[in-house]
Image (cartoon, rainbow, N blue to C red; front, side, top):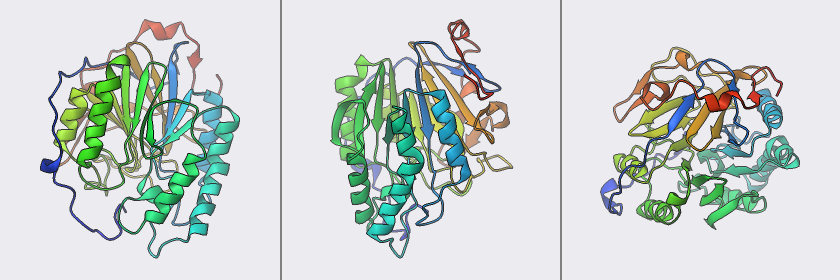
Length: 357
């Protein structure tokens, strides 16, 4: 549930500020790992993406899959972990007390934040609707979210920290990362889109890769969540114009690598309760997390799942296309941007899926 009160219509896209459009950046080649393990280039930036770890409202317990995922992430030794939201289980009516919300965050830190911190792995977050809903009535949960993460800033090079931990930007190596605060349905506010345009105008050209992440996706991919998205064609055009390579999102509880207009959209699997069916699929998606590796000229993407979180998901088991009344996403390996292999990966140490590295 995104909005317990079902209050208010999404902002009118026509009210958003418009900027002069720039040419679409060159589409990155994407090495897509559809069937097995993958090798990692020695100089690649390795990023793990986790999402939707929470359980029932107010719960301080996590599914065993969360602990297994953390253990596997520690084995992989990524340079960075991104959470695309729903780390705790707020947004309940009647409201959870401040003490209940704080206990949930203490449990999350014990389960996830502290093991990563002890290993020296930065964790960056963006709010989910169950963490810090922007709908009326959840100001306390947003306040607690800000307090929790202001005390735990990641060791990254911030380019704009003024809106941390909601809306902010940082750089790691040759990659620009941008967090958007998206816990409400519909187009982003005009000032948020203006901020994104200004940020990319100032910094975007300096980076080889540009990544945006938020909780809600731009376009839907899962059953039961068909209306729970941003759904803004103007934002799609802006992402293309700004040369965004990758958009990471949560909320739909199913992994899907979609492509539209030269942008690759990765919807994350959940690690907690409630895996969902992809649109066009007959069974629920498995729990898991995503690994993205960046090199000079390519992205390498896989989803790890299974009991030990060490099995690469076969992309051939995913729908070749996800169509909805508002969008049409083509599976990224079928979208014409993929290359079947890259010899540069072969000579590097392998990141295998058998639990060893």
